[in-house]
Amino acid sequence: MVDAVVAAPAPTTAGRLDDTPGLEVQGGPGGVRRDSLRELWQFREVLLAFVLRAVKVKYKQAAIGIGWAVLQPVLAALLFALFFGRFVKVPSEGAPYVVFALAGMVAWNYFSNAVSNSMESIVADQVMLRKVYFPREIFPLAAAGAALVDFLPGLATLVAASFGFGLTPHLSWLALPVPLLLLVVPATALGLALSSLNVYYRDVRYVLPFTLQLALFATPVVYSLSAVPETWRTLYAVLNPVAAAIDALRRIVLHGAWPSGGITAAATAQGDLLQTARSSRAIVQAAFIARPSGGRAPRRQRSARRSPREKGRAGSAVSIRA
Image 1 (cartoon, one colour):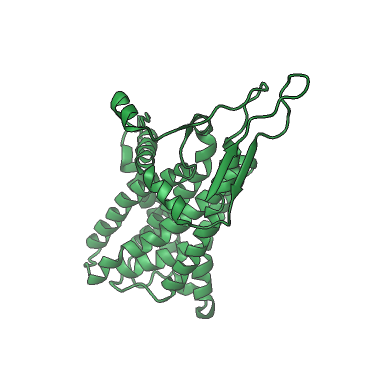
Image 2: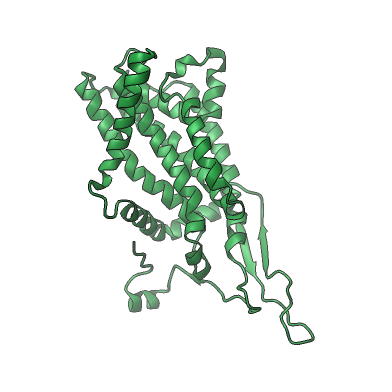
């Protein structure tokens, strides 16, 4: 947990304010701590409000609205089925290549959108961060949550397509939350880290799209995880947790099997990744509690949570409009 303390600059002998830094950040080692999770829980209504705002803004004035969450993976899967399935003859684990590629694209679209939107979230709403206090992680977490709204219609489309190609549900479908967890954890962790890094280096917004394009073909989206040599497969799944999630999703939906044991190792590695990214709280806090220009001392930031008396006058704790 990081405590950010804003100190007013001391006046000099000439009556002017000194130019010494007005921000002191104190904190312990990074990682997920009970205090920080408790604070996020206290601001859960604010987080939900930002998730809803992100969804409304994304599909505002869109003709088919959330239907784009279905069209994008479906069209990509059809193109992959034409070139990689029909022309290149890439193996698809005995399943129809369209459904095989659709399972990969549904998972990859969530990860890509969650990371990209989380990276831009803090810089895009920096004005609000300077006026109202709430945990800075809410912006990346809200971006990841809004991307999850797109993932659910895509997953429903995958299930419907599997029925259309004659695949039947199995008891293993109860394990569908496992690949979802394996996608949400690394996407959230990477989004937290990149959002704080983007505060200081705007090059991140140019490097990330190119990196995601390369990572698409470094991840078993259009090919099977079995294409990786067996001796390197577990390490590959740990280094690339999206590969483990896609493999688990295909095993559950396409083959009616339970996720492989390598998923446990991937989940363990993702826990360490989340703790590493959680330490970026100090960077985020320090970036947006700054002294305004003009030589004046900074005003104390208002909290997004209000007292019961203020709630009665205002009618709600926080109002966020799209």
